[in-house]
Image (cartoon, rainbow, N blue to C red; front, side, top):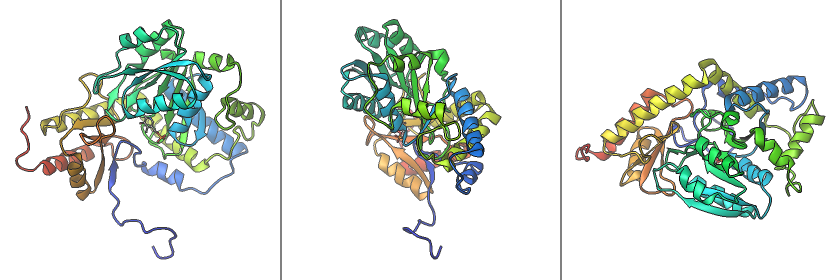
Length: 374
Ligand SMILES: *Cc1c(COP(=O)(O)O)cnc(C)c1O
């Protein structure tokens, strides 16, 4: 386009089947492209309220969630900062790349971290946590570990935490919208998610939902967290005192409107139905890859719905072959780096047709003498 500022956009961008973000559905894209509106006043606060109400219902959280501009990791940082105080002890299963991120965040907030090793492809064993949880203040756990495509048993982990008097903080960034998890029913004190994965909205907003014990924990702190932006009290104060502008900063109004459009679509279809369909699609993808000789990374029974990870000798060759067909998938991420491909099932491209195109592309990349199914 003549006169367009910025670098040229390649004429044919590949369709995204990466492990997040997903491509937007048409209606959500239109909401994103709408004119900027004021981030205060009746029109805006009605949009925000509906968004938070739908989000709270989807998360199974009676307390209104926090919607905080930033990445999902902004809210992971806020979660650890608000729930714990320096010197406290947390147990963190090393589930892979994002388990390690939780360890790094906890360490950066000067917590004592008890790392629990987890076999690649296996779910966290709650019994192993039970062995080390005595005296700990909390557990930090990834619900769906995006580097392995494994879903971890957060309900059982929350029970173990509570039996030991510890709180349970969950990274649900790659699970919310694609798995069923009810914050209040599971008794999770704090759940973090973001908008760009299972919620199928643009990146740029993090979400924090507090369960019943989460608020108590925050109120029981000896002192306020050392941050202004990440201190949930800052957000609470504006909510309580500035009803016409119930947040401390200028909200990215278009991101919120696009998120609302996506939440309306999920609600029309029904979350349970959406999750069921995504599970079927993940199975189709997983079984198709297995038939081509690419064994799933997750053990049977803990396979996630939003990301399918499968072992392969040369992931970059598979990725290149798919790019030639106009589709971008992900390679591995520690501990699967260089050893696996990951297919994201999020957003507009999470369809049977696209999964079948991925499978065709993978088959083509393996060539005529690909290993036969064992
Ligand atoms: C994507 C992802 C993150 C990081 O999210 P950002 O929005 O990039 O900060 C964290 N945890 C998990 C499990 C993820 O899948």
